[in-house]
Each structure stands twice: as C-alpha cells, then as structure tokens.
Image (cartoon, rainbow, N blue to C red; front, side, top):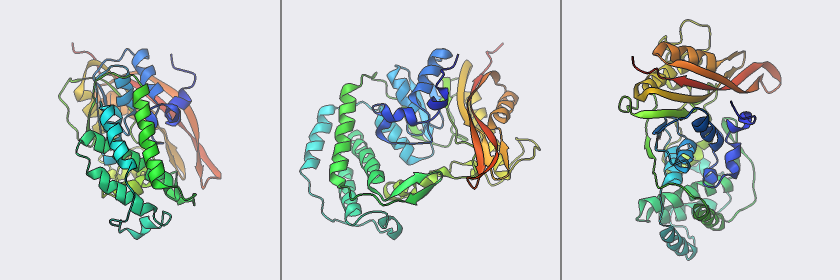
Amino acid sequence: MHPKNLHELVTFVPNKAEPVHNWLYYKEGFSRGVVEWAVKEFSLEGPVCDPFCGVGTTLLACKQLSLESIGFDVSPMAVLASEVKTRNYSLGEIEKTLKEFHKMHPREIGKFQNKKIRRLFHAGQLDDIYFFYRKVQEIEDAKIRNFFLLALIDTTGRVANVVKIGGSLRKQRKPHFPVKKLFLGKVKKMLLDLEALKMSETEPKVFEADARMAKLKENSVGSVITSPPYLNKIEYTKVYKMELGLFFQEQETKLRAYIADEATGHAGETKMPVIAKAYFDDMHRVLKNMFHYLVPGGKAIIVVGGGCFPYETVESDDILLEEAEKIGFKKIDKIVARNVQCMRNRTIKVGTVRESVLVLEKPTEN
C-alpha cells in the first residue's frame, strides 16, 4: 500500500523541512519519506545501496533507521554532501572552530579568476567567499573541514545573483547579503540540527563512482533504494556548474542520457531519440550491476521519470521493467506516483509522462 502523498514524496520538497536533510537543497532528489515507506512496506534489509545517492537522502534516512547503507555518485559535490550529512561529530570541536571563525575579519587574500563567475556576485562577496574557503582548508580535522565547506557551498548559492531553473542558471539580482553572517549562521543552524536529532552511530560508506561501472561484491547488498537521473533532453547538472567550478575545479558532471556517445542496442529497435536509446543502454548496465550485488530475495526500489522531448514522450518505467526482466529481475510492482505534462516551448502540450516507483526482486536461488 502506498501513501496518498507519494506524488510529493518522490520530490525533494518535503526534505526542505527536515533537519540535516535540508543542509543543501537538491531539487533532483526524492524525500526521506520514500525511504521510510519503502523500508516498512517491503520489509527491506540492509545494507541498503543507493548507486545514485545524490546528497544522501537514502543514506541519512537509513542512518536514522539504524540500517547500514552504502552510496556512490559521480558528482564530487553530491558525495561531499552525503558524507557531511551522515558522519558522527564532536559537537564541542565544531563549536570551538565556529568561535574561531567569528573572530575572523574577511580580507582579500586572493581572487577566483573566472570572470564569468565573478559577475554573478555583488562587489566583495566573492572575495569574502574565497577568504573563508582558504580558512576552511586550514581546518585539520577532515570531518569538521567538510562540515564547514558544505555550509560555505550552501551560502555561495544563496548570495549569488542567480536562481536554478530547469536545467540552467538564470541571473536574478538579489540583495547584498553579508557572506560572513550567512555562512556562520548556516554553520550554527547545522550544529543545532545535530544537537536536536537522534541518530544511530552507523556511518554509511560513501564514495565517488559511476553506477554503470562501480563493482560491489556479489550478493553483498540487502536492498537498493535509488532514483537514477530522469531521461531528459536537459543536462540538469549545469545548474551546479558555479559550485563545481568554485570548489571542485569542475564545470560539469555528466549524468544524463548522452554520457554514452552511441546506443549499443540493449533498448532494441524501438523508435525513440538516440539520447533515449543511449540512456537505456546505460541503465541496462546499472541494472546488471544491481542484480550482481543484491542478495537473492533482495529488492530494488527505483524512482523513475518518463522522458519529455519536443515531439514525443518516452515512458521510461515500462522500458526499464522490460530491461530488468531480461536481466533476471522479477517485477513486484509498478506504482505511478504522479503524471506530469510534457510541454514544448512551455505552451504546446506534447503528452503526459509518468513518474513511477518500480519494485523489483532478485529471485532466490533454486
């Protein structure tokens, strides 16, 4: 039985009100509620794997449920966020470091040289960000260093004169927010979340890897809860190019269907965009990996969305179910969470696509 608000739970929106989960907004993710529902409804056991872990919703929810988990993602920013949200901390050390930062007075000690990025900030803001970035790098304890770095990344997105819309950044002038006040206020808020939230001491394993190629030991994972990038004509990670460029020396992280140059044929001879064929080829490889590391009887809960293209739609859920069954999975259920209109140029309706939850099981050995 699925919750009546599943249409909302498959979005990141509910996490905006959840302590720790809301440390970095990531609109492509799903909510903590999906994990809690899936674990209870399908009697899932650990360790739980999320091969597209994003900013760690599955991993953090499992930590709250005292379940072991493991996650990986190709985005270094996502991996950082997942780690920071799920580590065990010495709150006293964070408080001590925070007091030291309050004593600091930003001064220009260097500049980010990218002129395009500099234009996105009010005068002096980027210099303040750079000052605190340098100071964060001087923190010896890696956990605390990453804790402060995530707060600075979030602050940077809040002060920049841009908003994330669809698959792009759009310039939007904002008030001249003081970087130091917002940054240290964010750290304080994160600290208060840790003081208020009760969690197990279990620390998930998190690493940077490609779900198509990441190898885990055979029959080593109890369950999978994940949501792969939706089939889309837009490379949505471009909305994070500012943060990736400033803090990770990367302008893009490829996650979409066109990470493959050509389709190799797993999706059959169906008529669909080349991008879509490449996407399903990639997902075929991911599903094979899942089948390999799931224990017999283990279940995979996968949140997927249909593809919306200028002149056609592609129902990803049915195609992925077909691919999964070819590999050896047994279909337990396909739950439609919501239907979304596919529009061309925001005015012409192309069709409707589904956002669904697939429930698969690796059969027990005879």
